[in-house]
Length: 434
Image 1 (cartoon, rainbow, N blue to C red):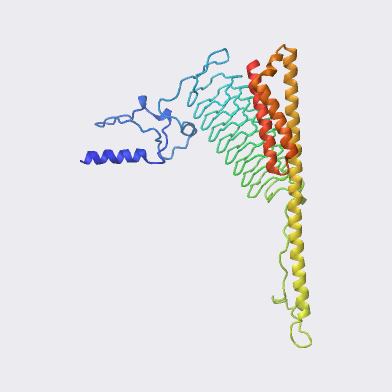
Image 2 (image 1 turned 90 degrees about the vertical axis):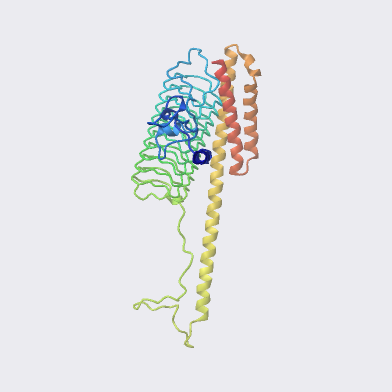
């Protein structure tokens, strides 16, 4: 009877929500727990992990079950070797995947530590909980990649294309993102401690609560970025562009902000920062919302005019009315000024975003023309009948039409999506003719 109750309780605990996964590397052979003296071995429940486990290995293995990993360590897939259909939880440590087509591949929980992925196409791939420490992703296409909780410490993403990629809660400490395309990338709660983003283009970044401690962001265009509660302690922000960025709660202690622009940035607090920034005149200003009405006690050495008695021995009604009118006028002027400032900032932000969207469309058109020229001179004119080629042209037209119809900032997201779809289509096309 007691044994039945014990088994029932065990089953209930295993089935309970929140039972986390056991990292594959921590499981004994065949997924069985080691038997202690006199105790038979029991299967380890899928989804179990030791309490307090916080290492990168445990995080990257979170979604993987014991024995699930395919062993592809050190394999060279650049010489025509066929990749398995499923790469979820695969161990690709030190593997060579340069130029590989990994579009929309599920690499959740995979180990790509020190792997070479130069010029690989990872468009819309899933890299959640993946271990990419030290991986070489130079010139890789990471457009719209989903890499939640991924470990990219020391990874090389030089010249990588990562437009609209998602790295929430990821660790990119020490990563090299020199000249990387990071438009509309999400770094919410991500760690970029000591990361090098020199000459990168992180436009409209979503990096709330991100940690940029000691990061290099010289001349970085952080226009319209959401950087609320972000940490920039000791970061190099020389000549960085924070125009219209959201900076409430951001910590700039020890950061170098020499010639950094904060034009129309929201709630920037540069206390403890080093250097002379620009554009501070555009920051919100505190306005008085009320004036004393004569009810406060006046200093002894200064007579109070508001409390001066009139000829009848009472407070002058006319004086009170004048003061009240002045207060009302002051409040009205302040409210009008704040409203006008918001409209001006909103219009300026939309104009800037529209100009950026127009430039993106122009670059997409240039890419299409360049690829068309390559097809013609290489005798591959038939590629213009390819589905991806037509999709790129349709996306280009859709982006232009969306720009014409755009009236609000939200409308410009349609332009960005169409441009990204066109780039993805061209990327797939290039991969097939490589």
